[in-house]
Length: 140
Ligand SMILES: [Zn+2]
Image (tube, rainbow, N blue to C red; front, side):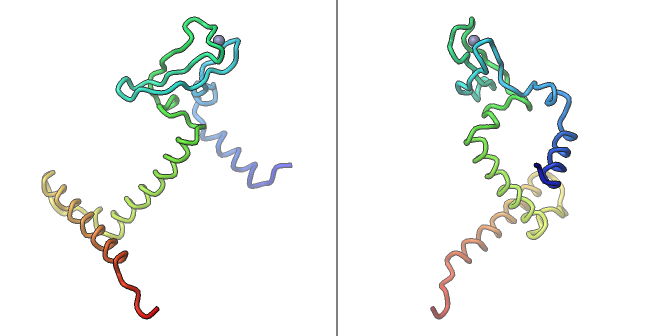
């Protein structure tokens, strides 16, 4: 029996799903042989290749253009999960730079000056991190 938290999570996910998602447009192609398998992607072409599990269909594989619903790396793969975890740490650092290191209140105009402001802020952040890593611990 699902818990109350689980039920509310499922309900939230159901409500937030778009119409295309609920129609199953994010799912890989299907034929009479079963669900098609991921066969790689081409970043230059901006498309992912999907293949019939037996190869009996004609054509046996198909390129699907990259889209919000069809990403170049399928969502259920281990690689997607690893990349998504990295995204969390990147977003956390962006938030720190904006809120704690003064990147957000930009008081200059022109792209060159904004770029300089961002570069100096990031440089200060990196120097601080390097100093804390190199710090020799006092009395061990
Ligand atoms: Zn098939």
